[in-house]
Image (cartoon, rainbow, N blue to C red; front, top):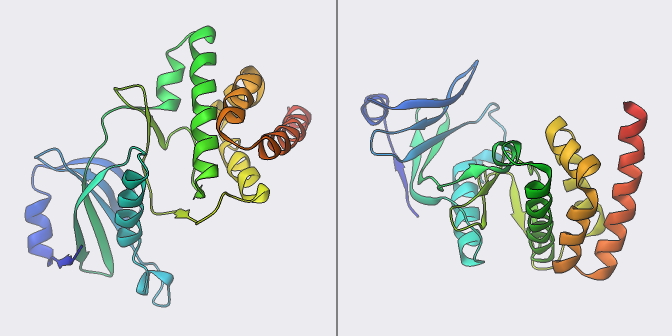
Length: 225
C-alpha cells in the first residue's frame, strides 16, 4: 500500500467533524471520522528511531493484512498517511464488537467462565501460529458479533514462522496480568477455564508449561495482595 502525504490543511479538512476517541498530552491519537472510519496517528518522538525505516502505521497495516490472511479478525486498512511534524497515520474500518474487558464485566460468573475458556483457546491458537502481541490485554481483544475474536491496536505485534517460545508465551500472560480486571478474571476466578481452553489449541507441552507458570504467577499475585 502506497503512503499518501497530507499537509496541515489537508489533515485539518480530513478531521472536520471527527470525534476524538483517544488523546494525550501531545495531542490527538485516535479519531473517528465523519464517514465512520478511524484515523490512528503515530508520532516519532526521536530523530533516530526505528520509525524511520519501519513506520508504525506500516506495521499496523501489515499486521492487519496478515491477521486477516490467517482468518483472525482485524481492522481493514484503507489508507497509509504521512503527516507533518514527523507523524504517520493509518485510516481503517473499525471492527464491530466490544472489548473483552467491557463485555465480560456485564456477564455473570457462569457466562464468563464459558467465554474465558473460548478466549483461552483463541490465545493458544495465536501462540501456535507464532503471533506475539506484546500489548495483549483484554482491552485489545474484541468479541465480534459472530462470537469470534478480533484484535486491535496492532503496531506492537510480530508474526513468526513458528510457534512462540515458552518465554514469549509467559511474557504475554504477565502483560495481561498487570491489569486488575484481567488478573482477577484470568488468574483468580476462571484460571481453570482459561487453561482448559488453552490446552484445546496449544501443544500439550506448551499448555503444561504455561499452567505451571500461571500457578507461580498466582502465588506472586496472592502475596502482593
